[in-house]
Length: 496
Image 1 (cartoon, rainbow, N blue to C red):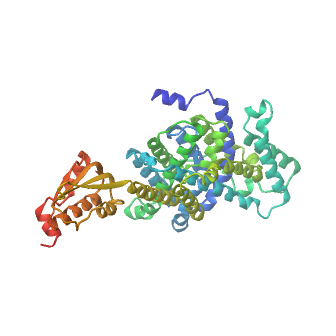
Image 2: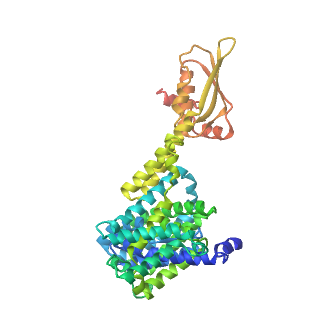
Image 3: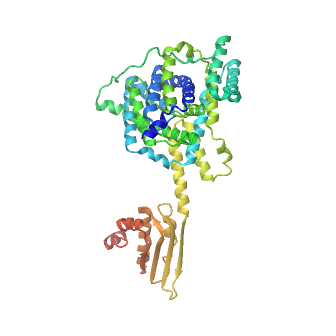
């Protein structure tokens, strides 16, 4: 516990964490404002939420160095609630979302991430990279040449500054990009979109606000259909992002603690006038690429964000959107798994299909949860089909021609049960059948039902049947659910 605490708040990488936090704070501002607009609320709702969530997850989250704030995936789920019932009900829904996520943490649902295959994670990453890039297109459409020049210059700074001797490794290039382009824009008086054009920044610190809604069942039924999806999408995106940051930093994270941390953060956000949020892959990648590794970077990002928008709003509002677009394009390029394109020729067709379906559904629907669920389901079906093929059944006739021994090797379950049944010759004129299951395993009631079917069919033909070699686990499920050795059940099954 103490070792984990020390590593999460280590001062050994203080400079990298502080500078990374500054970059992330600047990148969070337009995102939070944009997501507030999507949800149909005042920009300060998204900004306050980003501050609260980032600070709380810095202390309670399960993944050091990961950035959580207001996100587009969550904002899309809030639109109808805000339109029909208003901001107060959104805050109440945010509180309930947090409660659900904390419960998920105590139920250890974060452990379910082990069922998400690598191909689904790759599809998720690629889809997010595409969505991040697509989100920048409005800022590059119907604009003057200055915007394109500034964006190109920003990308040049981001990719070339790291090669500058000494300084290149001391200061994150995205921070240099934002500061330099802001200075150039202000000095030349360029007429281009700035952060201030996106919405009015708040001029006061967030205050405690209990949602002004009736505490009754009617309110619960209003917010429940929104809080459940928010909780699921928030956890899914957070846990997937944690997995990606794990890979980027070659470290592990506590997924169940992350569930509790996200839930606590959303409750605090709802109590201070913010909306629900979750982990952000774009900002998390910016943080890691800029040198952020510990909880300090996440804390700095949240605190600096609030200082910037409340106390330095006149300066922050002058930041050209082109600079932030350049940073986010860098993020989308760095996030996309380019190796996955090369691997399309190397990997099995089923793996490629899972990845491509996940990408297609997420990009088409902008619903991360739907895409991941589809990918996981497809991966499970392919896996079941593949394992179902690993079933081999051989038989040997005795010397007196009156006994046949069937040797079953492999896994018997819903996918392979038909293959199991089809391997037996029920019309053979023989006195005795031995079914040797020493090298087989029965997994479910479909497999048990298939065994019942085989034994009962043979006995109906007047053949004696003996089942041998069941391992302990298979014997348990067969003894509990099989009917071939229960005369009353067999008679009922055969219609007598």
